[in-house]
Image (cartoon, rainbow, N blue to C red; front, side, top):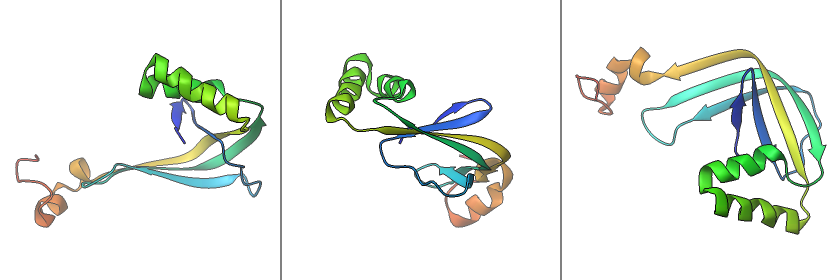
Length: 118
């Protein structure tokens, strides 16, 4: 899944069937490793089943892999006949956990950063 921020909403396109439960969800997006940099979102989602490849998916593939490989990746999905689902989150609440800026002392104490902030 390749989420993209389309203010004021978070958009994700996936090939997996969407859950049809409650439209209220929470999402956490984090970096790979220490120190953590986290964005948390809560809000309601709109889920739409699509025929073929979503334009947002094709754009994300080209952005991440370049034009030639991105187009090939999108075409592979078309050839497979897989259906996609668009999930749009409209956040009611957003939080940023930036341990480098907000809690630098904890990073120094844990050995993940030096006194000068690096």
